[in-house]
Length: 382
Ligand SMILES: Nc1ncnc2c1ncn2[C@@H]1O[C@H](COP(=O)(O)OP(=O)(O)OP(=O)(O)O)[C@@H](O)[C@H]1O
Ligand SMILES: [Mg+2]
Picture (cartoon, rainbow, N blue to C red):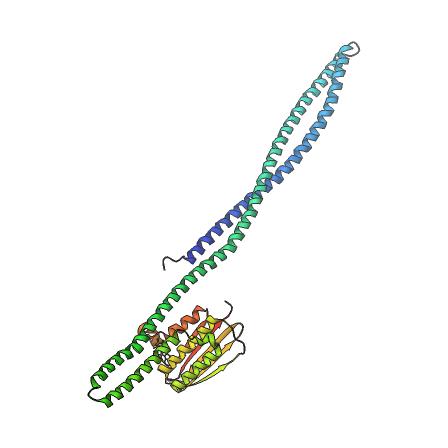
């Protein structure tokens, strides 16, 4: 079945895809984690810078005042150099000079800190963006993963469904072919053969009629019997094709009628017990059960040499079960199953196939000289 979709392979691919996405999700998670760390570090750094700036600004403010004062003093001292000595002037000059240098240095420091602050703020903004993106991606990946996880199951069950339908369609077609082959065989072996005999007998009568009238009468009687039997055979084939009474009479009466005819024709007793009062109105299921009874009783008639058949049916809301047990010769199931279809007949296969098409369970047990037992279980939930 090369053309069929390989569920196993498909499942494998989907699992790998999910695993790859899962792996990427973890990587993105790592990225988000380091972005978060960087963001926090930068934030701390920014606070530190801000503090340093505050300190430098207040120092600059103080220095500005001091520098102003020292310059004023230098001007004073320079103007009134008569009141001050050389030492005083030099000291005032040096102080003013020192404050000025300090002020320049501090201002420089302030400038650098502000520049650093701008840079850090910029980096902080970037880190925040990365973090945001990574967090978004992680949650999106999560959604994708969840979606895929759910859908893998859906896809798998859809694929299995398609395959099952495919197999089912093939089996239905096969079952139809088998059924046709069986009808052809039944007509060929039964009515076709009998009618050929009838033609031969008619020719015999034609030749006898002027020679021996009595013989001819006897032959014509036989011929009439042959024709009646043939009509019966044909009726049986038609009935087997579709028991009309299932629709007209209903399920249980049809079975009862069928059993009555069976007993009359075979002298085999059928003990029929219904173990429930509730009946489902499912034509397909009812027909399936009726068919199994038909096939099983046909086999009992043809092969078993039984004197008694026990038929039990139980029907509930949830399921139908049935058992058909005969007390006949029994047979070797494995031996029969190993024969090919035409040689081995269609009956058993037909029963099993019909039950399985309804998702049911078919079981047959037989032991040589110890009868044959058939069990059927059909669920009602589909
Ligand atoms: N109740 C039974 N008792 C004894 N032997 C049985 C019984 N049911 C089936 N068998 C054996 O199993 C074989 C297969 O049965 P199956 O119904 O598949 O084919 P068949 O009756 O030979 O032909 P067909 O049903 O197509 O007319 C029979 O030929 C018979 O040997
Ligand atoms: Mg059969």
